Amino acid sequence: MRIAVFCGSSAGNNEIYIEEIKALGEFFAKNDIELVYGGGKVGLMGAVANSVMQNGGKVYGVIPEKLQEKELAHTGITKLKVVKDMHERKAEMAANADAFIAFAGGAGTLEEIFEVWTWAQLGFHSKPCVFFNINGFYDSLFDMINNMVKEGFLKEEYVNMLIKTDDKKQMLEAIKNYKSPNQKW
Image (tube, rainbow, N blue to C red; front, side, top):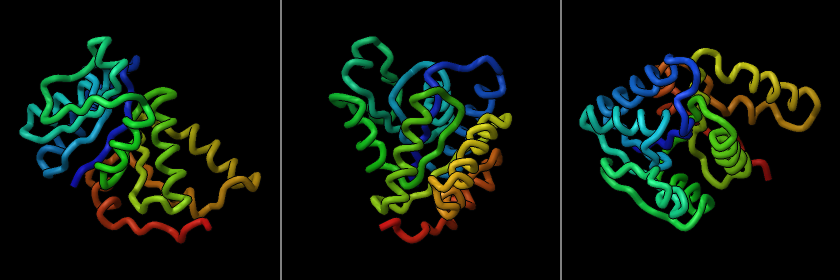
């Protein structure tokens, strides 16, 4: 199984995020889950890749040329693919992942998970989307998502298709047992 992880290119202000992303990387390696990620060597991205590699796992990174040129590319992983731009990066990651996890991060993390979640709603794929909710990081976002339902802009079944947890074992079970909802159209 390959899982794409979207997360910050910085470490954040709370040490819990580094600790938990390293634990997630170790969990992946010990459960034969291959990591697909953005190919960077910095922040949470670098930490999860390093953890998977240090624990004997496999890591596949996808990085745009522009970021590679800034010397942000992680060269110590199983395979690094350099692509033209962010659109190609996201398409490559999506094509090579069996599930998607949003860990703590910024605008890019949200953009990536929201795109694959939208694709799932439209029936472009039937892969699970997970919000790994360490330290309640995504609680406020889910308040907003639930408000979208309340205001009639999102069907509840599309919220229910999301996996929200802070437990690695529960997450893996939910991914393995995932059943996508009916297609929107």
